[in-house]
Length: 521
Image (cartoon, rainbow, N blue to C red; front, side):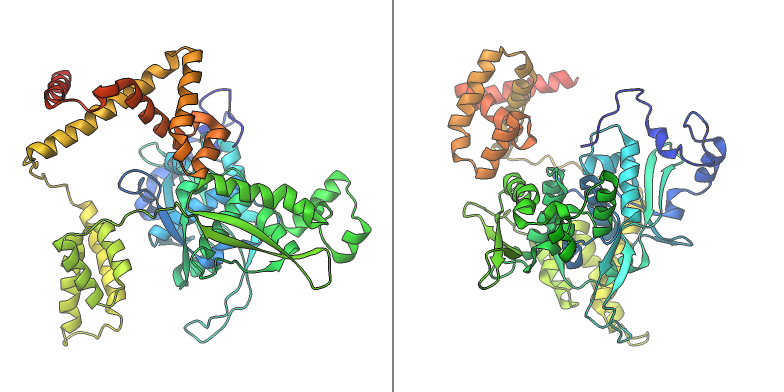
């Protein structure tokens, strides 16, 4: 993570300090502020919702990325771990909505605090954030596609930046925002991709190495393949993919440090730093595999180096992704009658059931059913132009309806107070236990060190011995400071301290509820 700024806390204006419209002390001038104020966000960019990448429970969710994104090969400059992570999130924002078409291109905007929070960037060094975004603007990557487009053309080679123009904006309310566009080639990849893989943003935030982020994308793409094997490449072709450093950047680095190529490296054109597979494996591959296996519990990644027949040296490399035996995919909630009706209506229009369920979860079954009924009537209307793709028309109309619903004032909903006695007791019990956990967490810093050591030793012995290997590895690496371990530890601690009081009587729950109501007054 970037070095934290230990000076003046007002560091955010440094984002705007490199330009003609900034004052010597780093503050934006009134001219710049007036220009920004004249164009609110709705006119210049699509405003990304603060919770666009989060589930209903607040956690970062799994997103779909085109398969071409799984193995980025930079051909100029280099990409750092932070740059790769920022790009992953900015692309994910762009995939959530179409953006706003302006003279400068299709643009999106997100609050700076939202980007920092989602990408787990907890530093105040915002100049470093800007430099990382610049890396994305000056790094060229190659794309290829063997599929013919609508005009029957094939584009076997395309070259583009990872990011187009970027602006840091102070909006009319004083918020600091980031506004960006995507290069035309990259935008086409997003709009026209047919195949995708699912990538966990939550896992990405726990990764510190560029190589591990690259391996996460690769493993996420191939984990659903029947044999669990990735593509096999000569191992030197993996070097820019896992280091984020192009051959050009490697040459410049050698020149800057006065490095010289060995004779063997000069003959095959490889980077001297990784002239043998064992160095690449030691410094990059083994560390990436170890970190990825530690931060998630869905699968194991295993490198498979290969040799040519009769040769003793490593020639190529691929990876095997193995689903862990103790992995349990998240349970899919059963849907009610309204959701079932909405799914049937959307499937009838040509949508897949999986995609229809995602739309119902995102926009509500009621809205999906209402729009589906309207689209059915429109399709059956012979007096108007024929709709060739009802499913596409439905998605467009659904997004319009959702945007229109956001602009309407919220309607007051009657409170649902019809809880049964058992349901009320269960809800109060959850609140009671959550309160015990909060108290245990709040009091823990004042616990004597020897008592802390005893608690943590018992926790490791009694609770972690049955935990998944990834949880145990995270504990050994970060202790109870890691969020994955912290919630588990304080739940255990609260239950341990409460003893029989962890499951109170109905009378005790009533007393807790009354006390809470009195505190609110």
